[in-house]
Length: 347
Image (cartoon, rainbow, N blue to C red; front, top):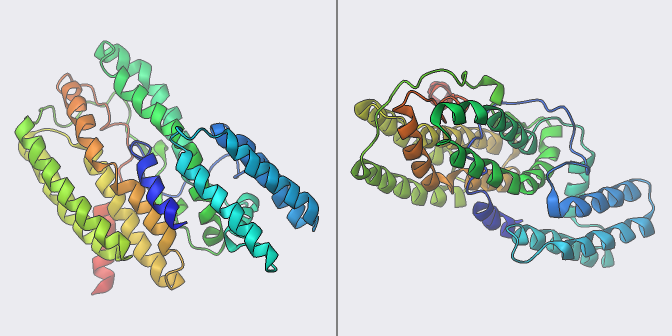
């Protein structure tokens, strides 16, 4: 799992860009037949077969299914962006083989089994899929309004989001045991895309920030990332939220000063802060049992922040034409309100 904490940060450069934060319900529960798993579809099917055999006490069938799952990972190309996840799954299966020699399946494999069978609804996979469908439904409108200028932006985001569906599936598998115990990690940290503004709404700000201003923002964000990653590595989640609050307030003032939206950057930072506050609460409730998953989840939100600025700069050019791309396409995350509530509770 520790290796996965490092690998997901590379794979989620864009997958978080349209995430929001609030508990959402999905139409289908986690299962092995998910569309979008791509190279991992066969692995998921064999893993589900192994889970069912384990539940029925058929050890030979379980081992056969696990061997088939291991062989299916050979079909994941090493140059694939999913190569590191492949290695993580392989390590789990190897560790399970070792543990069984000494008497019992590995805790990691049991966790995957539980994630597959748990009936908890919602999660990162469902939310990412919801975001993809929302963006695709809005593309024709924005394309017509912008003369096609918005197309590359939305196509790139949608493509990279699809690449990360297997990662979202894996995170959800890890979260299910906590959710079943009443700890809404992941599901309680997401806002539904149904809360986004109408696509026709004109942007509040229509200015375009200068390269000099954007460079100054980039420096601030880079410094924030260094600080936040340091806090995340120590599971100091409240400090992550505190640093995020400081930067969000500063950027919102900058937006007003320059009459220009930093919609994606502010959205992502609100997401980081909201997630960090919740992680601090989960930490208290579980005596730190959720810390590893919280570190993973925060990492995939903090890592792509630098990529938000080019997105915002391109969006500002469309805002100047009265087209509300991005600013209308992400949920409003109530981080500042949540921060105030948290502060009041600590007094």
